[in-house]
Image (cartoon, rainbow, N blue to C red; front, side, top):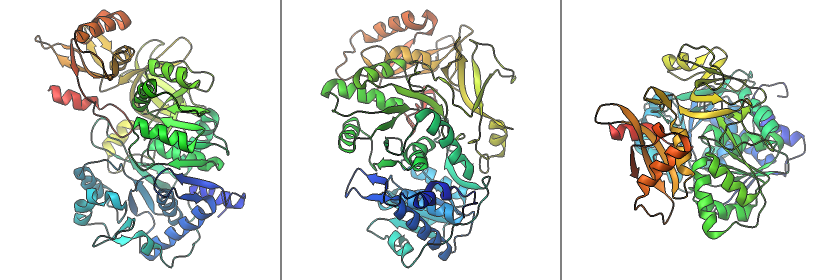
Length: 514
């Protein structure tokens, strides 16, 4: 299949031809710490393809993957691609009602599920009118399901199906930072496109790298970090199936000693606070990257002081599959999102679709080879988001004199105070630079006259004294970013609502205010 556009040829089987059969592709940082080598991945994924064909799952059928970050994840994902079946990795932390909606929306005929997650989806899966096969990965085999080992039993490798680079290869459901998730369809060539651009020209991943991503494989950022990027060069990825607490992440870094670490702003903030208390482990990181939401400059500076390495902050989306706007190694300016990743073009436009001038705020549009093929079953939203070669991101930015992009907030999050646009992120960044603040979110709230003003929800550093702190923070913001932008109300909270990618769900905070 050397002439096939099937992505599994490049990412999986190529490594056998190039002599990497014994090289670890994935290793687990938990339990028995299993290792999956490139040769075994090629064979086992081909067996998954055979098992799907034997089970009567036709080409282009959807196979939902409610699978933890474990070595079966890449085996199932690439096995589906080899069979022409469309894998759909799902967020493992959604409520049952969302799984029910996705099962109906996708009309999936097959479900792969880690046994630990079966209780979360059991009711919805058994009620689905479309599912014909439920495969449970683990030791137990609940009623009406088939064990993964039994599903593969007696299946030898089969030849992968031929595919065009433009064939839809897999779906990802958007993380839902502004509402219900949408099925985003990606083609085979998109995976390699992200590796040839960000993976090669910004991250600079190499064959001898070991990469650990706290972002899970079920969403775009984690899929690139933890699977397609390392597989593009024959590197090794560390998988962890648990929740990334600061202590747990530090334990993994100390034990696995990765050279590349991929995090999100929320976790970087928690890690810096943790390390200031307990000290840094004696390890060296070659690269650190961040995405999911813009990284506050203060967090980036604290991390560099601790580790001696910059966090390379970037911007990506499920619709573009990975990062398309980023700082670069040796060229990091804290508080900015950098410049376009080589291979991508960017524009800032106003509400009429016209380009804005330097220093003016506009919505970010992007074009590049990794763009999605559209949303499934969402024609109106597809037409609003995908405009020919350009994709609307829903993010507001302005450009500085040196051409760098400065994040201003989500389109839905922006609001005006005294006729002037206020960027929630700008105010949040000012707040988190205060030593008492760990995290902050700004939303619009109405005063007694019905006018919109900023309101802050704040998570404090451990041990912070709230006595007089609200007034002090208001004065601090006035000094940092402007008198009209300060939060008129401040509410101290234990945590902020976020997506699995670490994005603050400001719409939930706004709903609470309504």
